Length: 252
Image 1: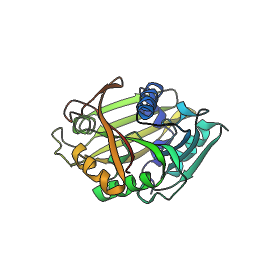
Image 2 (image 1 turned 30 degrees about the horizontal axis):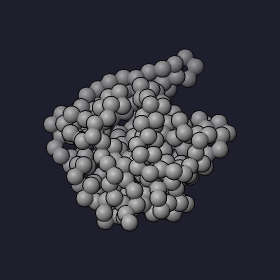
Image 3 (image 1 turned 30 degrees about the vertical axis):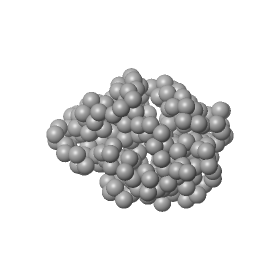
Image 4 (image 1 turned 90 degrees about the horizontal axis):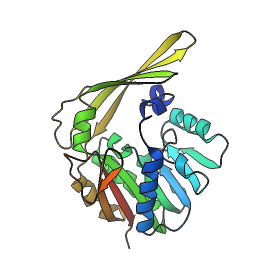
């Protein structure tokens, strides 16, 4: 079963407050500072397309995701523009080309509950990088997982009401697993259709991921701490920042 299928149509509702234009501007700037020169882009775990849409028209884009429902939403949003969308599991990512920029955003790696799966996903990213390519990926910090997965909230627009209820402890331990129940109510005529799913994430400490890079053929350029409003810091504090943003290149 695809746990993201009930959420796919309402994913843009859930993430409506995310400023993807600003975030991708910062990510692209960091990638160019790290040596990005070309325009071949692979977006791994692209979901509904929010993480590549700000770059459409300036890059030759390939997006992949495990969820067929999420890919359907991405195709709808692309609306005929030139983007290649493929269904692949990032844990067994095949060689899709030699890309100048590889993205894996929106805490996609946190959805992998086994550190071995994170290693495999990073190895797949490395295998798809051009010789001088740059990859950027992010992780939710311990602070974010503790807050988001222990609290409840609601987001709505004209078509959907999304109810989020964290089911984990506010003192989630490092490397712990967090779970949330998500109820999606989609408006159909004068009533709502309700679907329910559960989302699981695991805390992967920054130092664990850094230690994995060499073994998969990647080297760290920089790791930034991110706060709300796409405010970036040169170092990551797991108890203060919302995300850790990694900028990496292929190892020599």
